[in-house]
Image: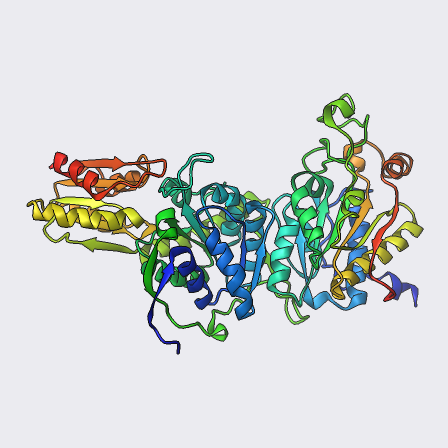
Length: 251
Length: 354
């Protein structure tokens, strides 16, 4: 494949420029999702459920039908869409505040029902858009605007491990935790995303890809420092890998 | 055509069957007394008509599932009772903001809080003044009988589609639990339902620009424009969609105002009052929003007294006062906590007033 062909913008991305801060992982993950949608040739039947938070505009960045869910409710909204239109491909895009705090019930039950939707879960250990408050995934000792002395387990409890919790649920067909800090990780993440969509397309069950992500602005680090911080701290707390894969030999 | 014979049914089931005949094939719900039979009816009945039933994990999830399903343009409904409807308010606000057609049923019970499971009308404010955040309206209907509940359910789906607005059937545990003979209309042909292809999320099929259903705009000027457009629509609804019943009002000196179950009870109060020589009549709002202010207000010319009766401390009372606009006295009688006023006690109060 020629260089220009390989690196042209995916058809599933719109012309609109991303509004993300430099060094934020949203842009990489958006592009990967769009490439997967293109390669699976599902753009015309895909419906996205955008989250609240920095990625609230995600429905404008993808050239597919879309809506915005209330904080945490994306899996419920996606359930409504999918049950009403089983022939469409439905995905939600959610952050850690969204999915692991206010939306815990919705994600657990959608996953447990084996809802035929795909969730991309962006875990950057902090609330981005509201200005850097503690997330359920904030690491112990990590300073945020609402844990100014560092998160303490005897006060705020421990970082929640979403993939480890969801892997116990029978409805989950594909589940992996990944990162996008190196080219190898990016390639792996795309493969996981594709398998999560396959889980939906082949009616196997619920698919989720957790992506450990950077938030240079709210972490108070440069983009490069952020990647290093993620590697040194987040990966220890949130081990990478495939947690569930019932997709089989289709890819 | 189905044979239009009267059948004996329970209130909650009558509403469920009416919804299915109106073309509703999607129901998301969560059990709560006194409307669980409606949820159960849909669980049993929808698969028979190739429909979809799903019991959600909470009422919060229900209203967001309704949001999702409604955004595909299909007919969808849920039902609940007071504490459940409180939980649904998040979704209701988003649905109203995104202008999605769907039908909610609130079978009201005694409150506040956990309250009890007996009939009440204490959710009127929440229903008609906006229970969720923002500045929105639902069309709200208060049926007095099962036949009317059936007809209003069908109408609810039609006006929801016509205006892209959520419609609420506000009833109570008495109507939900009673049995009455009902004549059902025939099944709507699904192919004749309104076409929402201009906005619904159906996938672009690579043949059009993406559709975006949201209640969202960070630009205050643009958001205000969205809100103004929505309120222009509300003005049209106020003009065209008011429903009410006038009972023995021609020469009435006392106008009893009540809705739903209470509206039905006070009709018999008026009958007895007239036997005692009191010229009374009933004005029964059927659409609680839009409220028939002008239509009720006209009676200020000839009536001496207005008398509002509710199963609450007086919520619709405020709308009656707005309609009467200080021109005549407005009296009130209400019971709460799930106590249904008897015709006898309402009559006694009426006789005290005249």
